[in-house]
Amino acid sequence: MLVSVIIVNYNTFNITCAAIESTIKHTHNVPYEIILVDNASPTDKPDDFLIEFPSITLIKSKENGGFAKGNNIGIRAAKGDIILLLNSDTILTEDSISTAAHKLRQMPDVSAIGVRLVYTDGKLQQTARAFRSVKNEVLDLFRPLLMLMPYKKRVSLMYNQYFHGDYNTYCDWVIGAFMMFNTTLLHQLPEQKLDERFFMYGEDQLWCYQFYELGYRCYYLADTTVIHINNASTELSKQLKLLKKFLELELKIMEYRTGKNFNYYIFSAILTIKEMIRYYIKVAVFKLFRHKMR
Image (cartoon, rainbow, N blue to C red; front, side, top):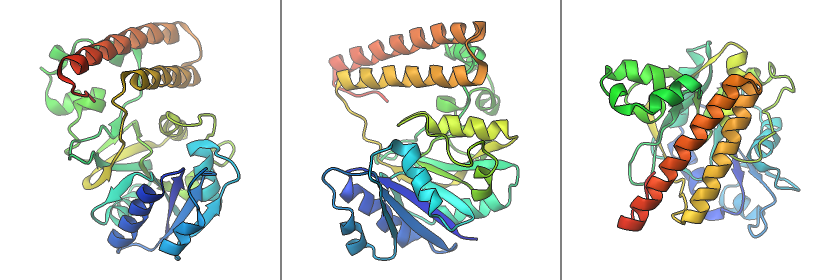
């Protein structure tokens, strides 16, 4: 069993070095290779990575093709029977790769495994996700009623922010900051590679839905924790741009799943209104207390 760790770098030399260093330091119980794809960084000097880490495989892309294309470039060079997509802004503090790889090998019905991710302050990131639906968006509007449900029942319906990340569970999708899957899974996809239609953001959900169409489910592993820096901007204008991008991608994924039918338009209206109201509540809180809400 060989794990091919794919890391895509774009102009984040120091952060990427920390990710590579932590991977080497903490991975002991499974053989692995590290493939670093530099996405045509305008200021980084890719060869400097080889000075710091001569054992890695460095690939210099001629263009910044985005997260999906960068990972596919790395996957094409991979020798492992397991692929790990690892964000350049992650830091391992334990042997998370071995833990996840051994778990994946025990579960032939699983497509992708994600692990417990936390911010640098230790707060949990919502790694285990559910596919969005009209039903779930409506339920989310009635949070007080949801909180009356038994915890695991609520989680099985909603995941996302309703899950404390405190136990292992199947889920619909896991985020791409740490996404592990068997290489053979790619051979079952139409183009035998990860879908590249999204440049950045949303691709992880799309991939997991495509795995779901093949008859697999994702799995969240609470047994190990990885730090994901994920520094979001505190500038309100940038947050609004991200929200608009998020809405655009969610609607594209829903269109992919259902087509532009009645269900799609109902979903679009509910999601857009709900998220815009939530955004302006965040704006009000930020202006009053100068405190960023996640």
